[in-house]
Length: 110
Length: 115
Image 1: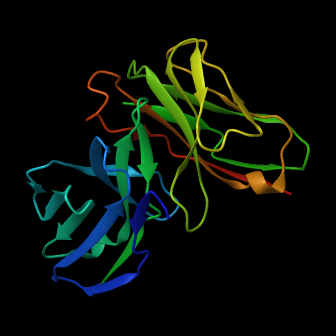
Image 2 (image 1 turned 90 degrees about the vertical axis):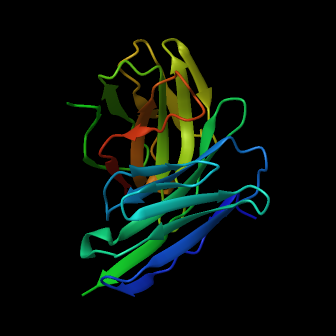
């Protein structure tokens, strides 16, 4: 079982729709979580950190559920420019290493 | 604002050749790391460093060496390239203050093909 698991997709979503995807993690001692966005053949870029109480940044909302060991990302009013791969990341261990999911591919269609 | 700079962006090697991937950051970050990314897989940690003179192995260190003589630079050396090392390599850095909540910042990546 992978330490951080994501549905690879692709999620094909019409422009303007709301889309959500989850990510599960196996290490209950994970210290922090992030969502990164990666465009084709580019470097990962931080989208948002995920806080225990949930947090919002514009059209994006992230949630953490420690009891069920998953985090989620909700994108409202999706734009064509939201098309990308979304990477779920957990931080764990004494060296605070990042463990990466393989990513969920999102395609927004006009 | 340079951030994390990786060179080269593309490289083709023959099996058995050696080379060094360069990584430099200008944010005075103590923590630096090297990842490889293969299709359908998450980023996997090769080596990391928590400061000048200190390096440690990550998940997939075999076939790679690193050194950290300065805070700014963290080169990755392929000792004898193998086709299995064909991948995209990313260097990342992080502010060591608040190690739990600080995200990592990435370079543009190096696309490496081993023939």
